[in-house]
Image (cartoon, rainbow, N blue to C red; front, side):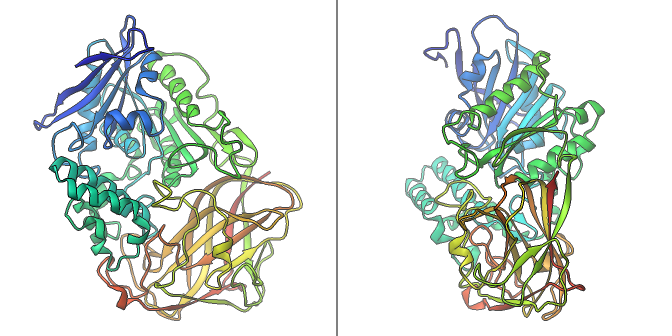
Amino acid sequence: MTEGLPGYPGLTVERNVGLRLEDGVRLRADVYRPGGKGPWPVLLTRLPYDKTEAAANLGFAHPAWYASQGYIVVAQDVRGRFASEGQFYPLRHEAADGRESVEWAARLEGSSGRVGMYGFSYGGMTQLLAATLRPPSLACFCPGFAPSQFYDGCLYNQGALALAFAAGWSTLLAQETARREGDAAALADLQAGYRQAMSNFWTLPLRDFPPLQGGRAPFFADWLAHSSDDDYWAPWSIEADYGRLVAPGLHIGGWYDVFLSGTVRNFLGLRAGAGDEAARRSQKLLIGPWYHMPWHPLAGFGGDPFDGRTGANLVDDWQIRWFDHFLKGRENGVLDKPVTVYEMGRGWRDLDGWPPSQCRPQEFFLHSRGRANSALGDGWLSIEPPGEEPPDVFTYSPHLPVLSAGGHSCCRPFMAPMGPADQAPIEIGKTVLVYTSPPLEREMSLLGPVSLTLFAASDAPDTDFTARLCRVDPGGRSTNLQEGIVRARFRESLSRPSPITPGRVYEYRIDLGPVGVRLAAGQRLRLDVSSSDFPMWERNLNTGGRLGEEGPLAARTATQTVLHTPACPSRLSLPVCS
């Protein structure tokens, strides 16, 4: 069926255009054609959320707008979703299906034969996976808000399940399965479960997560069963071999996006290791003051929420510049600088790399007189190494976890902690150690990766340690910038977990991820250390048992000790820019 759109003279839309794959499954797409005479390059987006609705409303401008810029735009439902046939399983078929879809799109009537891909989140992974197979007609792509692999930095973080994202997303995906089955009651239950996610996250054992008991998201059980980085995850790791990819890439991320670390890793990995020199020279990183969606300036960091210089339209403008350059041969300066970021507290900046060359790691050491518990305690940060100081001790009960206040998760505020938030409700409790710097004497830019080296002991055979980096304003408001976690059994290897010896001190490294912020004189840095950040990550029951199989009676309270001495110098590494 072909139709027009009012206000777009000559533009036509063909609904549910079919592609029969090599295995016989038929995928369907909406094809938007510009008015005028071609041939036109093709923009392809592949997603699991209903091509007609999602391609228009989940971030980007409507496909008709992209078509009006002189492109054939193809919005395709992936296998097993909405109008497309087949069985859906997250990412399983996206490499091969994507390769076939690119070459099919290149042969569409009116096509110039050159294809670019765009999309974010799952739509970013469909691009990256297709690009690993090097479809000949793929001239460039724009993976937005996309991880570099499906295990670490996506469904898990240093061995801990990203509960809010993994369980919430599974519940969302299961809704379409119920719809395809024609089961209205199941669909209503799943929709209710999605809205009530925060209460469902407390379920133990986790395998009994209420919305997913109907078998419509079998992959969730698989994710729990494969809690280490084993062969199950290997087909979906982009970073395992960046040499497979040869497409120029515009990598788009947000400072509070759940996949920010993966987005940066993809940019760096392809810039250093793409399959040819032309591709290595043609990678660009764009990071704005956004979380996963919607893309709007974040309170306290991104300026006026109605400022078009930081809104979603900016992403569309960058993508069109990218496509104009690589698909139409226009010299428009899109590659003049490899990195463009919105430095929170300052504004947009073009940088010579990531991290920029003027930034160097600076260590800030943890100190206290033995009572760093809460923001009212005696913990502090300093560039001076610690002396022989008493340790800080706190307890962690899985029944009373530290609750997430903002952060890097996905995908709706009612189901996942996202963005900057006041940390006062968290930092008042004594189950959180708080270390705060003196007020800064001069402004400071942080642009690059953040990590924490923590010397700690636990009386449990397994536990978690969490960290949050915060900015404290002169009025005392503490706002989160980044956070991280390490599951003790994964301290040495994500693929070969090993228990800890109760009472023994271990050195833990917690990767918090990238930051980009300008701190004004008078502001302070703060580090919060605890053993839970729930429901961003699921609770460690402190037993060493199998993930998802233990009930609430198995949980035990752990006593945690954090050391800061010359022999055990716990410290925060920050990317300080001159």
